[in-house]
Image (cartoon, rainbow over the protein chains, first blue to last red):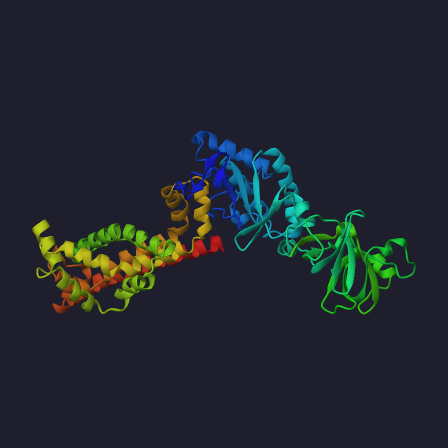
Length: 310
Length: 222
């Protein structure tokens, strides 16, 4: 394990740097502030590498950087969750770290504070030129804050890449499910049509047209997924041309309006075990009379369907 | 008032604290932070003086320190003095029978320190020693104070073990608790009464102090 050219851990070479020797800024999940020290004292405690005269001034600078001027003398017990987290962040930065590690830093604060802290972290990232490793279970958070994302599952790295790429093109069905894709299925490549640039994918009784993918040949078993955004509801009153694209018929199983958008689950006709999940605007759902038990049809956009090795 | 006996008791209590508290910190920290496989067994051994009749503990200590055992012989060869019926022997006994009074509050105190506070100190660049002084002790000090006060007060009051191991030699092993018994045996109720009252008040004050301080800390952290 290397950081900025310094080996931290190398079992073969017998290198094992102690926590004190690793230049890492660590923000703990519950912040781990020292309860008997003030906010300033907590930051000063991590400034051991500076001469003692310079520490208080540097600690004040760091507190200002996380917008906590005036709270120097408060103890952790007298700070709010968001304020505690900023003290923890300032303390982590105090070490002048080569890398900043944030262990689920936003899990213990309310949603409003979380949004604020997200924006501040994005600002901070521009202000301090230090790579930041953020551990989170919140995919939305990862997608919003990260340049690169790594999916870990049971101690193994499954996929690394830009968040958009991982969300849109997971390597396999497991990654697809871990990043929250609900429409992950199995199928078989029925035919290959290179000149039209399409392949036919057999999915139970239904055959879908998908973009040509040279990794697969006719007869291959594949896993595939379609993101919720790749599923378009057909209007019941007025059919349109787009409805020729991979039409799938079914019955509304679940309808959950959440503000502006509504989540819909549709049980596919002819295959009782298969449910497609997608979202529509609440007003569109209302106009089309969507409610549990109603028969509807959707199109699966060929561009959005992503094939994976089975 | 038997002033030499009181002075001896105070000496014994101070020395016991001086030896036992650092020892107790080491034992308590080990049990709390790096529990050995035999943790339960060790805890049981440490708690033993709480339930054992002092005479039983005293008997075994007397045998162990006697000139018939390798330990007793080695001590005599090294120092030229026997352990039984001497202040040094009494001090060893005192350290042992006070083990639970020192270790248990300390262990509770160290147990209550969240592990990631120490990790935070380490990644912040603090050495293990600095972490101990600046993070662990300031958080665990109420436990340290309890250990200190309980050990001190309990040493002043111990009777059975002292009698078995030390006998009642004036200026050497005759503590104030023994002196009270001595006075009662001699029908000197007035002296016994004064000394008893002194021990009663002293014990009440120290225990009261511990509870008061503990309560204040609990309220501040509440």
